[in-house]
Length: 277
Image 1 (cartoon, rainbow, N blue to C red):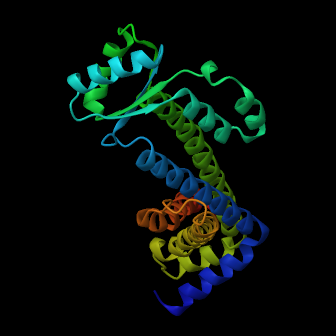
Image 2 (cartoon, rainbow, N blue to C red):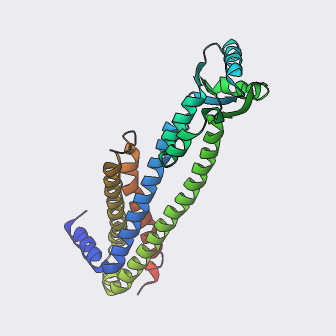
Image 3 (tube, helix red, strand yellow):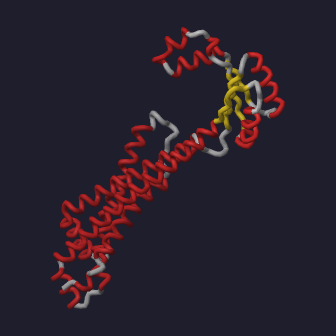
């Protein structure tokens, strides 16, 4: 592209003014929000919802004697299972650790108020048959599996992802509308220049290209700003969540998505260009 075209693009970016800044801000917010959403989504799936993770089954026994019977039965049914028995005293201490504000009250209670618990770690395939079997055992009063809360978490994450994606798309649509208006205003302001360019035989592509690139640059600038915000948030939280990582594809997709939104808005804004005086 020649220097005249680049000068024209720079002029259009300058003339876009406050509306152009609004478009950049909308894309930056949408990009940062979308990046955060997908980063957290990937982290939750990797850390909590991975299908290859072992399942933990918790069974509350009726008493100490039942713990031994139930442990032997589980070992016979699932030889490779890892079983940990928590005595009532151990359960009491763990609850006190989980709820420090209630620790004084919990530790003063009679330990017989707390039931013995078995924690069984098995594969996901073994969990499917083990839970119903344990629920039918008379030695157990309550049986819960980590897969149950994982299913609830999966549904919640999916719902949040859908709602968050809708918000990001709405922001990108808003950016496209703003770019559309910017391009339409620029076209109206440059109507005389466009007419002269046509009279001297300029190609339609040469006339339209600067407007399309102007819209794309506004969107790409917002996408880059959103990427920087995402990286800043990652640096801020990585000390708290060391396993939290930003996907490399997201760093490239955010500017590209912003540029696409800006290009679409500019294309729609140029739809009526042939009818301009």
